[in-house]
Length: 104
Image (cartoon, rainbow, N blue to C red; front, top):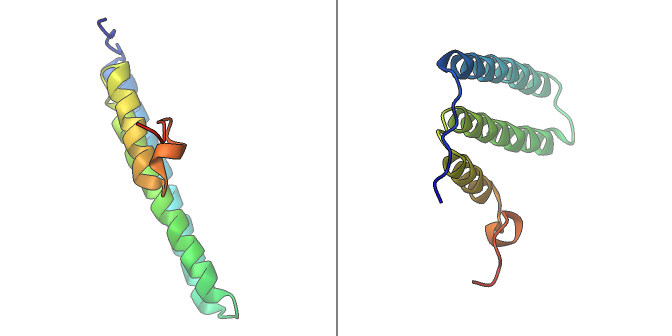
C-alpha cells in the first residue's frame, strides 16, 4: 500500500521550525536562570535538584529535536519511525513502552 505524502506548505514548516526554535530558546533561558538560582542558594537538596534539572533539560532537548524531525517528515511512515526512535532513545525499556511487543 502506498503511503500518502504529507503535503504541508513550506511556509507552514518554516513557521513550525521557528516556533520550535523560540520555545527552545525560552526553555534555555529558564534552565539557565534555574541553575543560577540553585548555585546562589545552596542547601541540603541542591545536588538532587541540579540532577533533576539536568535530566529535565536533556529530555526537553530530545523533545525539541524530535519536533524538528516531525516538521520535516514527508509521510506518515517517516513520522511514525521518528516517533518510535525518539521513544526508544529516551526509554530504559523500549520494547515495553514504545508500542512494540516485548516478545518478538
